[in-house]
Image (cartoon, rainbow, N blue to C red; front, side):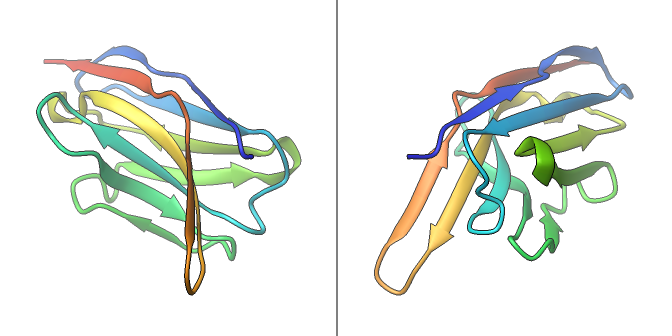
Length: 119
């Protein structure tokens, strides 16, 4: 069982920055793809950024160039650095660990952390 604990959310003005952290319960980065998702009220949860076990990253177009996903293997922690924040970035942000096989997928989620960007 993988446990994920997010932190770092809060209230920030437009143009500001925040860094989210996701602490995993063990050394899972060599097995799982780690991702950050967000969900705004009335919207579906969607992927913002991901980093594979090999270290490749990908971003949603809406955050490309502003957000950076990274990981610290020694600390079992994944980060999401968010710069030049916009009001439309307001959402609950969730950390995800994903492993996909031929017949089964595993997904683990954190509890979420609120990010609010004021205009």
